[in-house]
Amino acid sequence: MKQKPVLYSVYDVALRLIDHALNDNEYLQPQKLHRLLYLAQGYFGASYHGAMLMPALFVAEEPGPIEPNLYVLMEETRPDVRLKAINDKTRHFIESVWRQFGHHSVDHLNASIRNHAPYQEAWRAGPGTLISFEEMVRFYTAVRKSATTPEAEDVVRPRVMRSHKGKPVATTDWRPRRLK
Image (tube, rainbow, N blue to C red):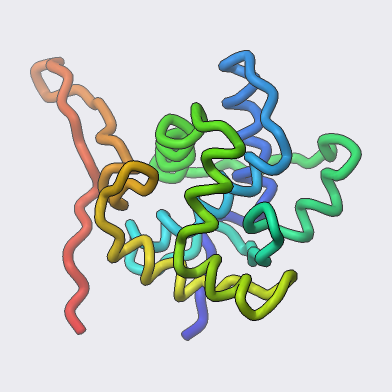
């Protein structure tokens, strides 16, 4: 099945996460950025029936998953990349990932993700092995809330909109079950 990612590049997410960190007066360490991107990709797929957030593949390295193209380009400094406009739903999703996971330390994110099945399966095959996107979606769709891993519906927080009378109302996207 051919897939068209929602966003044009991994930089559309990475640079927005960096900006969220800067707005919170926080330095976003490269390892933490890669873990947040990995979680965003997995939870987006779980939340939207296997849709891919960004055209990014992750490989298993000892500390945790990395997106190798981003890793090489951002090794020295932030690249000068013009971001494409994104829709409100996708912007809200990226903000939700930051709110859910951004406050965690790199060590916490590394430890929890290293216990996730998609990473473990790739790591057993050896460093540098691609982590299957389909396995990520399967895992984050089926995961039950634990101390370190929330369920997909807990990651995307409701948006607050206004009713026709001007009252605030929490809304979420309608996500019907997919029939097999």
